[in-house]
Length: 249
Image: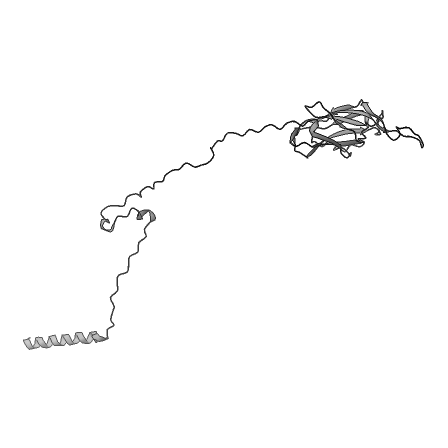
């Protein structure tokens, strides 16, 4: 092919290329975009040991530096404080107590012909005292009221036959599974119970007049409390039982 032929071939090839691509001006323009920023998750423990930008790749991160704190002595009580010792509560005495008669009823056992008479003890002192065990009892006098006919001028009419003299009552302690420790605060009341069989009960051979009064002694005190209310305790054969302080009998 001569030189002219080569020019014609080149011109044809250029025309084919331009025709296949279309008009260059119709192509959409594409704005250059910045590359997306790379995201990385950094653990909290790695940030403190990450090297500066210029040193990255030069050395591996080391362990986090320890945090130094200054210990202070707490201002608290010692771990094992010395035990506190409290003064023992004193025993109740007759001078600190007032006795009164409770309501006579049936005993806890519910036995027919038997009665239970509670005696109340109130602490009228200004301090707490301690009671445990059984009281001591001693009956005295004759509580039967002297009857008189109409017009009898006797000064003994309507009065007890006797207000003194010991009575031959036999007092035994009622059994108890446990003896409570009673801390009797000021103005508080505890009790004990006298259990007895009535003289009018069947099988009672000897009828006994009721006592006029009873002397009550608390443990550790020889001085007695005297109760002279209308106690009306007339036990069959003169035998009765007394329960411990604070125990229902």
